[in-house]
Image (cartoon, rainbow, N blue to C red; front, side, top):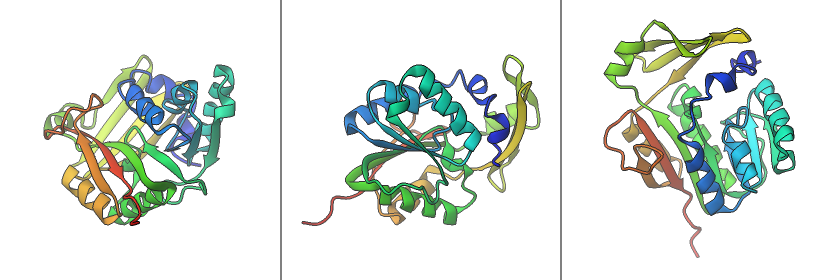
Length: 237
């Protein structure tokens, strides 16, 4: 059981205001043409609109509970035939297929605790890609103002859903707690700087194509969020 199983029914109400990344990832899927591998697919916040655009998605998540919700939502939306949902880990996805696009939305790589795990996950993502294929993901590095405003406080994120952030800027970890009527959980997220992400991507065998500061593709200029596009090089002829 994962931290997300405890909030599988709470997750969609908790994250309902997060919409800014959907069009970005769906557009990438349209450009790639599918199928797309989505790592950390969760309840299908990105995968369902991707499937609604007619693009097949292989969705991997470590939480059976989240996948159960995703499967039900896909049935209700009439796109279940375009979703192939699999229980698995970011570091070792159960995917034999090779695709043009792998995505890891909504900061899912922050669940990786250290550079060993990050490098393993990035190399695993690279192995899923055809030569010339693209990995897209987003992460964050918190600013001091965000830490000061939220540290050790229960805040109402959505009606009846509360969130608490306990920051350790020395260890660069965030202990995030969520609670609501249908469940509660606590998880630990770990962050690194954009420079460190770039170095890891290069070590994993990627060519960094872009690092954006937001989903509108503005250049990264030192803000909290970074959105990455990294390509598996074409094989030498």
